[in-house]
Image (tube, rainbow, N blue to C red; front, side, top):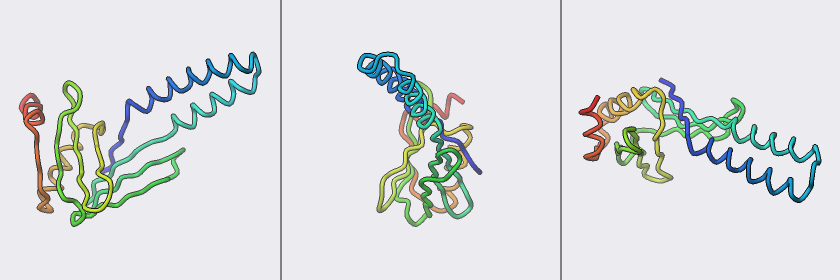
Length: 144
């Protein structure tokens, strides 16, 4: 199953970056037409970064896309996973952290649709991966 990851921080970073860059460049270069076009191209470039997460029968795939072209693709097999930690982020959102044996942990905080966390839990149970649910996450499970 393929899930989209929609990071809110990236869009906020993009907006702040554009505003600051626009302000600095307009003070230094006046009303040049080249500068606003350059700023808009950079903003479109940053906004076109997408993240995908696939849960397959025998592996997990984390992929970063730029204009629908794969930049980074990381395949994670059950033998590489130390633990799957389910946590709460924000006020009422679920998240998961995949702790990997040799490598950087993957934080899945904004998976769409939210049923992805249930599929991830089934994947962990199927492959006998250690599961840790925080107290806050258990409260979120009881709420829904």
